[in-house]
Image (cartoon, rainbow, N blue to C red; front, side):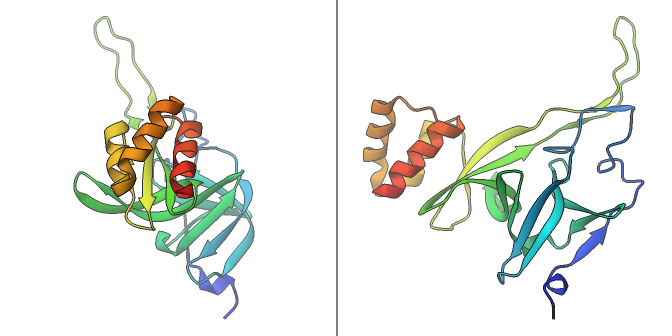
Length: 204
């Protein structure tokens, strides 16, 4: 079996407006970056699929690639261990939300005993007709928003929304981490601050 046969793909039909971003009547984009960027995908067995033109559809949580004039997605998504393109690394991982375990694509921001992850969200709004004193609004995608998650020792990723939710993930290192964060005056809602926090935890 060659490398390509270790991956499965699904062709995207051109009438899927969420993915074909040539629609002039829809504002915004479902993509983190509309352009396809050269990259590489690695599956759980270590098989590598290089030189792909990739982009991430945030709205549908799909990893797309372009072959000739046709659009494809990796299917099933669970085969994606790492996808590297545009200076970013993505992986398909489990996470907890509202007490339930789900799966989705995450950007890997820092790796180690604790891994810092970013999960993107894009919302879609239907077209709104004009009403009295209110102008019509076109169908639109809003800008991507990033939420932060942390996985300790490859466990299910947990959401970090504030200092309290972050500290409870550190177990018996909670007190030491709280002191470090306070003394260093670090934010728990910014990339660079969170990277420093996780780097410190991983050094303990």
